[in-house]
Image 1 (cartoon, helix red, strand yellow):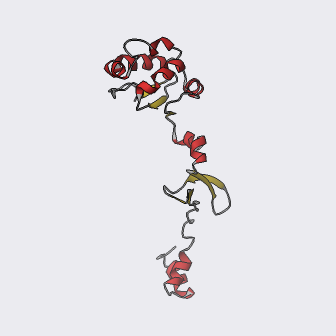
Image 2: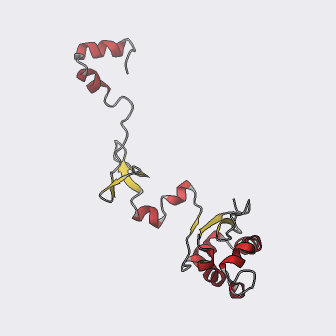
Length: 174
């Protein structure tokens, strides 16, 4: 991440930040977003630089543009980049840990994480199902406790209570 092989587009890459985090850019139409990126990185002169001023020149000099961005991204922390990129017109995201993504505003807005509770009522958040129906994720339910339904399952199989107790005493079922 953050400096491996190039994509041929400096605005489709992952850049390492000063605090060893990553910002991922995914601006497929580089020429469309290059000028705004130059504004964001406080280098407006790069928008009219002959190496980068149009699509063809930007693609021909993608390596140089990537090197410039790599150096600039490395000079600021991920939180500084969040603030700088807040009004950027292109597509970007901070690469987040699994603990961070559950608090991400878009994760919450899209219903990707919902609250549920354990058997004793302790609330926790979990990932929702990967499909939505009518624009809504199905609310997650808790998993059963160990052997929570064991007796009922055995009864549903037609075993009477004395047989279930005998199986428990002999260690065959829990």
